[in-house]
Structure formats: C-alpha cells, structure tokens
Image 1 (cartoon, rainbow, N blue to C red):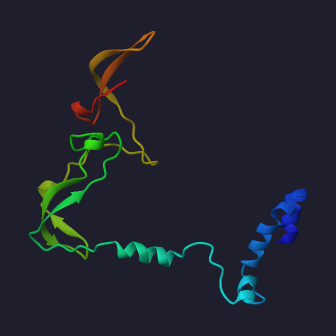
Image 2 (cartoon, rainbow, N blue to C red; image 1 turned 60 degrees about the horizontal axis):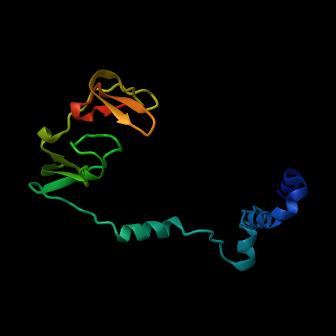
Image 3 (tube, rainbow, N blue to C red; image 1 turned 45 degrees about the horizontal axis):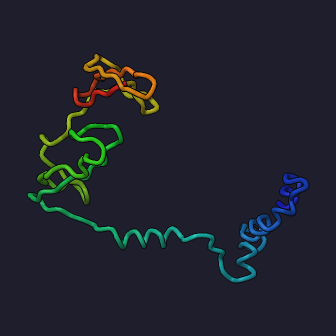
Length: 170
C-alpha cells in the first residue's frame, strides 16, 4: 500500500504521510488478525460516533403510538414546494389533515380508516425516471410587470391535471 501511495502521489507523498500512516494503522491485517492500532493499544480506533449510539439516542426521543378502534387521529402531511394539494401554498399549507377515525387495526403500526377519506389519485403518466411533463391547456389571465426600463408581459397558464387555483404565471 505504501508503494502504491508513493507512486501515485509522485513527489508530494511526504505531505500525505500522516494520512497514509493513519490508513495503514487502521486496516485489518490477516497476519495478526486485527489492525496494527488494535494490536498496539488493545482497542479499536473510533473515528466517529457509532451507529448504535446514534440509534439509541434517537430511540429515546421517539414515541411509539398505538391507537384503538374508534379513536380519531390527524395525519401528518409534508407538502412539496409548489404543489397546491390542500388549498393553501407555502407557509400556510397544512401540516396535519383530519381528523380521521380508526376503523380497524391491520398490523402493528397499520390502521384502516374510512375509505371515503382517501384522496383521489390523479391520472398522471410518470416516466421511468419518476418525472412527468406538465401540459398547458389554456390561458386564464394576462398582466404586465413594470420594471425600471421595460415592461414584461405575463400570462397565467392553466395546466392539465391541475385546478384553476393552481394556474401559474409565465
């Protein structure tokens, strides 16, 4: 490994000797069955917080909620930027929707609600890369924006699979 580093770095290998030493000392060696750092100091080198400690910390602050049949719950939604799904856009878009009544316990954390509360699925053709093309279907408004030295014409376009409130200026 040292030879490969010296050949790769050519004349500047002495600037990286500390990193090369660190890498060498923390690599597992078959001959001794451990990393040289572990053989010298009797413990493993920890470069960052272990994933187990991170998981334990997160789990301390997580609440496992279980609901009974007949209880009412709110559903948390995460609106995407620019999507007007629940009638408001931006900061005023709702964080929770509901309340919904629990009708049946299906699994450990799965519940069935009233089927009439299911949001309608829009028929949108999605490409393999999970993108789709917005198609304009009409112009619903026109205005001019006045800048210092010029006037910019703007048209409000109504898009396919969108409501009239979701029309945008272009």
